[in-house]
Image 1 (cartoon, rainbow, N blue to C red):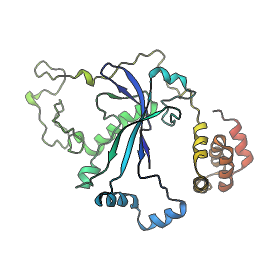
Image 2: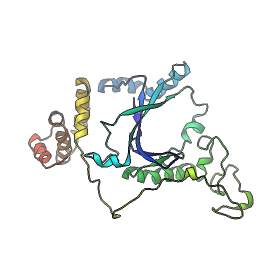
Image 3: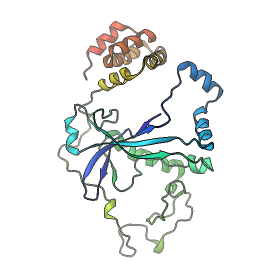
Image 4: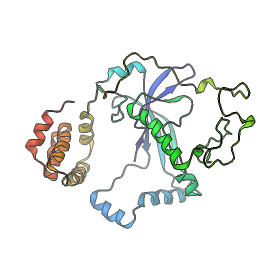
Amino acid sequence: MDGNSVHAYKLVNSKGEVHYVKFRWKTLQGIKNLDPQQVEQVQGKDYSHMTNDLVAAIRRGDYPKWDLYIQVLKPEELKTFDFDPLDATKIWPDVPEKKIGQMVLNKNTDNVFQETEQVAMAPSSLVPGIEPSEDKLLQGRLFAYADTQIYRIGSNGLSLPVNRPLIPVNNGNQDGTLNSGHTLDKGVNYQPSRLYPREELASARYSQTPLEGTTQQSKIQREQNFRQTGELYRSYSKKEQDDLVNSLGTALAGSDNESKNIMLSYFYKADKEYGTRLTSVAKGDLSRVQKLADKLSD
């Protein structure tokens, strides 16, 4: 399967110039899904079949690969879209992609606990030159994920071998839970300090973003909630559409009538055929679905 960054990020060069980017991984193995019947057959026998397939492929030297692509926008281009490009639920369909690298998985873990279960993934863990954008969802995740990892593996989680940089770290952190031996020279645990000054790299400073407006709680202004959903459905093959309708329709069938019809109206607004077929499988009220969809704007 392919992968993507979900959020937009900023790339900042040595001159301080900012560009907004989205990252996308494209699989070189091809995309393959299980239809509803195959799910029962395959997962009923081996619930971890995808993990086992990955491990087995690497063992035999059939290394899986993904090409990394980026899409790039200048800050002034953000206003040219009829939707908000920083909305995490949107893709950038007309922005060219550029290949910048490749990832090859060529080694399995030696110790699953140390190398997998202790990994502290967080979108706030970035290297100089890559910064978070103003994406509303990303701004929340920057704190939430880092805070969750501190709760899960302790305040020194970033000192674990799987999480720490390859080069020695020189910071002012002191003690904390599960400290594995990090100590402070001269006992200075604050910054800046004239007693033990530490060099601060200018390249690690975040770029400056000029702002003009009012701080407020508000939803995204240019939502466009349905167009890309319809385009995605229409991009599927006939079999993929059938599998989606049957699986999703069956899941919706057990909902209460009003909740079901509200959900179905969203799909109908995205694509009338999609919504009509789902309504039939989910045993919804098509007349009610159509009336609800008429009230929706995109």
